Image (tube, rainbow, N blue to C red; front, side, top):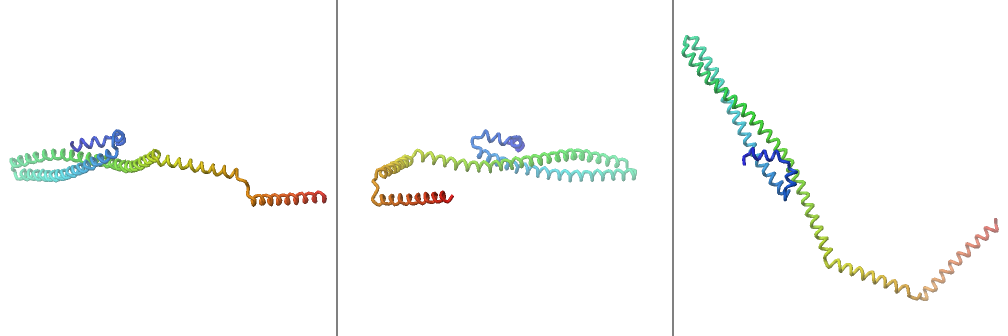
Length: 224
């Protein structure tokens, strides 16, 4: 595939649309970047060659202009010396060089247009390359996150489907059963002698506080 054929495909392509159609977007970006980089190298080399050719044409054109001026001078010299025949030959040479100059000027114009096209293509391709590299960076990050998420989900499913969950649930049921049995045991237990006296002492303390409150209330009522 030629440079300009590949360049046309790359420049006109929509990167997002291409990635949407790709089975492996990350691989697609890598290949696209490699293609762009290779094409960019070729275009820059071609542009450098075109610039060198333009300089060569300019040198040739300068030489031709010098020759035109030289034959003009020779024609004038021949006329001044009465050598019309030599003047005619000089003018013929001048015309030949002038025709050569016209061809070189057209070639120089074509060379300048070609260089401008190269430079425009290089700028567009560099923009596309920058966008593709950014897309590659984002895809790599997304790929890493997706892989981690996939592994986490696989671990979760593996844990949910494993015997460990069943054993954990059985152990939880066993603990709950033991707690219920403990509560039942405590609910039917007869209070000990010490607990009975502690309760009596607590009742007497309450009665004393109650009597104190009633006496204080009666005193306030008598005073008023």
